[in-house]
Image (cartoon, rainbow, N blue to C red; front, top):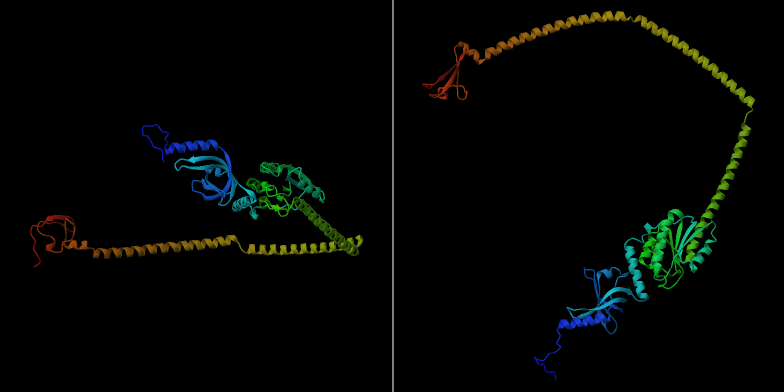
Length: 455
């Protein structure tokens, strides 16, 4: 039976808000911080930037939220079905009376999770063009100054140095020691690459080898970290990525300018480049030696031929003296002919000048000028006379046609004073109209007192 409630009796009765608040206080006090492992399900990504999801295992589940600030620090993209390890605190969402976990840190679990993270980082950086072959630097033809960024105590550096000792040219090796696995490894590698960029102007390294020996995917993971991959891509020196064994692939391999299957293979590439240059130099030396030998042989043949054709100095001098005498005789004859031609030309010009007397021409031209002047004056007088006669005829004809000439015979021209129109008939000037009467001499202003029509 249910206990009876006496309204007057004091009972410990709680409201929903009060009991929810007490539960929240107990949970948050007991689980202020905790680690929880589980599988992500029902993942939601609203525009606010927060993540809402559930963590579950085979027997239970708990709601979780990762706010935008914590989400931006994640190194991977959460997806449904991924097992993760979460760090955070347990709290109660009072409006719904639900408890949930506020996740402040999250990382994927297991090798499968690392492979997923590998693919996510590769897709992101590839979309940015970080792995584009067009941005890769040209590898050196004959590298002799080599920078190695790796562990100072690992097998990789020993293998690299052992191979480089066989190089045909003197090879200078600089080592920047770094940690190649563990939590501190990514920062160590990034700092080493930054230092290499700063010192490149002083050291002028031809190539940089970045890598380590083999290991598990967890051991090699430092070379998959996003900051390391970006640093490798930003290295100012042509770079070789040499991480792990032949089957191992890291994101640094894609970012580097050249990928070597192992650290030993990276050193062997340097040696191969030098040996290739050495072979080319030997081939060029052999070709040059042969070319010089052939040139000397042909030169000797030419010299022998010229020696046979060479004349004695006395004979050559006699030939030159004879040639010089011939040229002297030809020059004297040419000068004499030229002088005679000039003399003939001068005599001809003198005769022409004498025959053409300037004063005679001037006198003739003066007479012609006087004649032309007299003719011009007569022409002007005749033209003026004809113009005067024509003007007189036009003036006579104009006066004969002028209406004002009729006025001399007693006629008059009548116009209305108001608008100046000529009055041709009585109706054009009614009684009272003011008119003007133009006479041969003078003008009258009149007022019409009486008007009669022609009828």
